[in-house]
Length: 449
Image 1: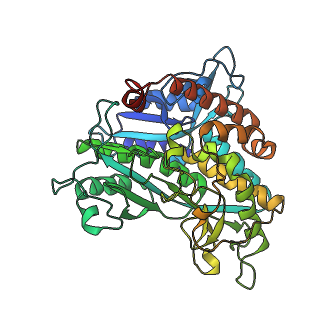
Image 2 (image 1 turned 90 degrees about the vertical axis):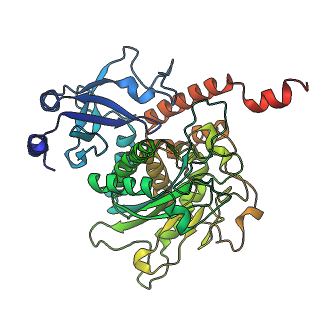
Image 3 (image 1 turned 90 degrees about the horizontal axis):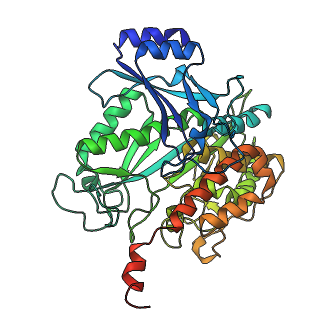
């Protein structure tokens, strides 16, 4: 949609409100809701203002108490709507539009700590080399009963059958059909928003589903995943249940991932540079894998951003624990699916469904980019289960943040000011988490120590 048609869109659809959205560090939608007239005035005059601190909000909705990444005076920034992202919001009765915005300072410089800007920054590095990345995310989530008391464990949602799933129903057609009313609304909402979702399948956990997106431009797909998460939650609420993208919501069930298939095209020819003229994997492809192997541990805070994320990354749990790669092997972090040369790609299986899509895409592509420019050679591809090798990924968020802090090249690619802001947000969240007394502690320590 061209900028000049904002007004046409509002008039043709009889819009009553416009939601202006930015994604914060956690991928939560922040912004403003305005009547159409105010929106049109604001987007013409840098009037869609929010505080810069919106990008240093923690997952529990608190501002970081101390950070050098934002001004002490809590300055305003303005949101610049991206006209290509204008869509209807299908779950409201009143005609409502939504638009994703970029963030700028009042001097028109981009806000470096905005997650959408970080992804644009990484894509700009590829463009400068004549490369164009392509991604295809796969996103898992659980449907669960409403959980009104956080002290109680999460329970799987009940579908049309009225019975709780007795166990894992991976790829079960009838199990997936049990949630048809919710799934139909998800697909209808996605179609109304032109979200390019492809296939749906039932995953290994009770009431766990996966939706795959078609491959495309990383920024466009990050926008779509950002909106998709919101969409799924709204569809679930319509049916009196929750949808959660927590990495590990159930104690004894598989976690939820956001696998990222990635390849790189030559900007001039449009050809996949991962395949050589003979159709075999190119040096750049191997370098890309080498970069992922070297830098993925340091990039983990962007792929596993919460304390809960590390409960998923454990052995024998359908999730990786090290940085090995292999051909068509789902026990490794970096899987190369069997394909023809045109579709040669690597699947990064580390990111969780709880990751901010802008940051997970940016980090994964940044690792591959560094491998290509630094000509990093990968290890040999493994055969058999990668779980027999050492657990080399950080085992908690503290370790991952330490690894990031001492990896200068990755910080430079992602933006050092942004990394500072991100680290400060995560440290604040961990401080809050450490004050919580868990049910495990009450269960085993209260009367036994």
